[in-house]
Length: 364
Image (cartoon, rainbow, N blue to C red):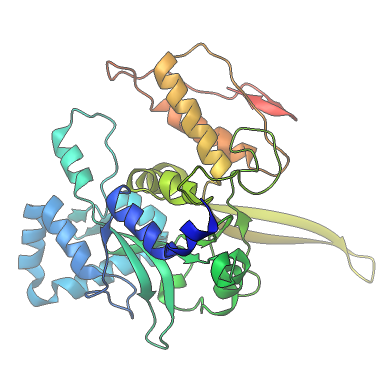
């Protein structure tokens, strides 16, 4: 793709068009989005009516005109207690009324009812997302699941004088993490900065302490030895097209919400000596969201696809560099293999275990 082709395209509009045609989303317009509550309850209720009709009718009958406020309060209480990731996977319960907030892809393609409900998830892609009651700021693009914003992107174009570093600065300095939309594990779960050639990602906004990781494929593409960055784009595509085509499409985003993204809590102990010579111990808990980096998502999905096609009995060697997330990749593979089915829809493995680790890689 040459510069003339790029100049003729609007980067945001191109991504929106792809997501709302090939990506499985519908175009959002925020007409019923509540900025103060950071949720589109009308869309969520539409989803509940579609997928859990009888239960919702009883719930509506019980609470009448107050049903929307009741739903929000129950949802918000559970999010404060357990976090959005848990709520998306487990739903909410209000005095015996149990509602799913999203239907994930069923294990069996033969279950017509669950497959229908999975298809009824309302996935919205909204450009210039106005989110605040305090200012007129907008986010370039937000992806929502049944009215709940879960992914946000700041999109920059080198041909207009900006790049991914401008998006990093924007997330760090121009977004107030105290707003409900940006509260940790309450709404947005992944913040992306994307330009024509590179992508970065964070899972929590902490002002100038916000930590971004590269979300690139590597200079020779995922699975190939190379340096940082991304390979040259195929003709007619942007270099970063892999992000929306392979990661943020409807099916993969729902898969990430169901099987990959997680909240992890760690306790770190540091031992130090005080000025008077005393040995002290300091315990600190850290909580973070783990979102799969591109190379992790790529290797897990490739392993699963190859195993599903060829069955058990093959050996694979996966090489990771230091600090690239080997443990999480192992855990995701083990978890997914345990649920893998053959053509007869029977489990392919009775159990899955990790036999050993090696500095240069791992076997499965």
